[in-house]
Image 1: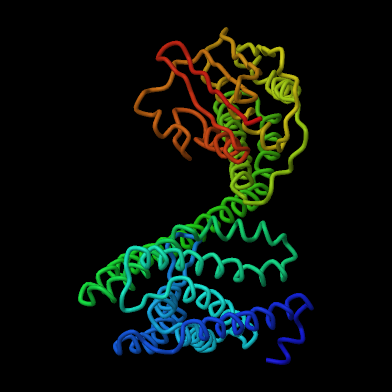
Image 2: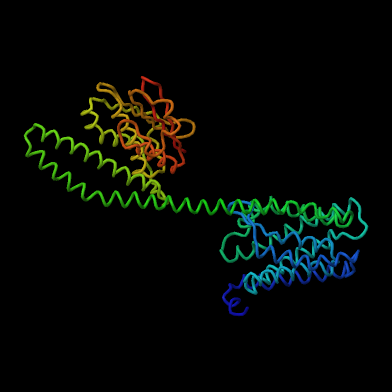
Length: 453
């Protein structure tokens, strides 16, 4: 115990010593006021049952939520406090916790702190709500209050080391822990009070509340299975992102060489079949280059690294996109029109490069599907929820059966890679926004990005 204890900060050392000391004092008061005599002989069986229950709970902690663990050891400890003599119950609970902590490998200081916490909470609970052989509705109410007091004291003392060690505010740590554990804690408290009352009034019915334990066990197994599946899925997605990045980088260099050689052949060829073949090869190489660029963009958008947020003027951003796609639009015979709302020049915090990529993909799709002589409109405005970017084309519209999977990867139409809309959705979602489409057969589609703020 000494080597580990010496590394603690002074406040943490004070807690390790002070909490058990307070627990011993409160347990002594409970013993003096309540004595050491059991109401019925069978109640002494609770002492070994408490030890066994706490040890099992320590060795097999359960989850009742994906990120939330609950120690079922509070149940036997509460029963010991409510049913055993006040001079014995708190000590039984504390010793059980200390033994359970040591058996699972916790250090002596940690075990002593947890045992002291349990001792203090159980002592107060025993003084408030100990159930004797003869009690009425008032005694049941006192037992309920005692269980609530036990849970509150236990939580208040349990978060103390975490606050001292992390340097965070004690109140904030307490609030966070209470928010995460109060449903499970109240359930265990209610279960303990029910078992204690039934044990004294109808012993044969006392085990009935324990029916909740198999349900918790099955829930725990399901949550563990879900956690393993989530880890496997995360691994697959990470491997997919690495694959996309590696492939795009590995192919980029030979593709650049191919495009250079094709450019030389294009200048050397003088029409005919050879010239047409070279032109087709150049077009396909350009398409592959765009696809590789989108693969890299998709891998970047999928990464969990923080966004490089900066103040972005959406009107300026869309103007940059229009400038970049003007030549492509002119070649296709499509006009690009920008509409800027009154409040559109307000800035928002966003990753400018990623957001520009999302808008560019929408514009690229709109230019490709719009017929010659049509217009593609970019509208930047603000509604009650925040900034809005809309890209409207004059294409044939989108078939109804494609709409549910429109933003999924590789859900391509007759042209394009099937990645542009997937990239746009991923980028918008990472910014906390939404993207949707309004379409009508024969009149075109409008893709709408709505951003927060």
